[in-house]
Length: 81
Image (cartoon, rainbow, N blue to C red; front, side, top):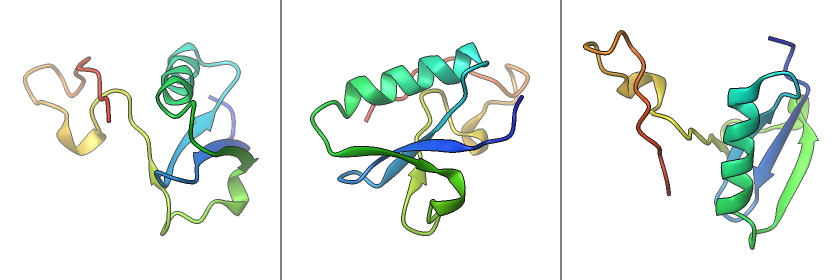
């Protein structure tokens, strides 16, 4: 995977999603993020300018801490806010 250079943020919800052009899973997550937040004020900013104390990462699939042990650590349950 390439180095994280840009992120898309939702200013209203205080969420962010990474933008990768070479990763299909990340592109799907970014499209879901855009569909959910299409009426919110969003912006694309350099990853170095992201304040991680203010913004939380958007996970379309389960967060890493919520992965089940039975499925080998990965589940495919969609996360919708």
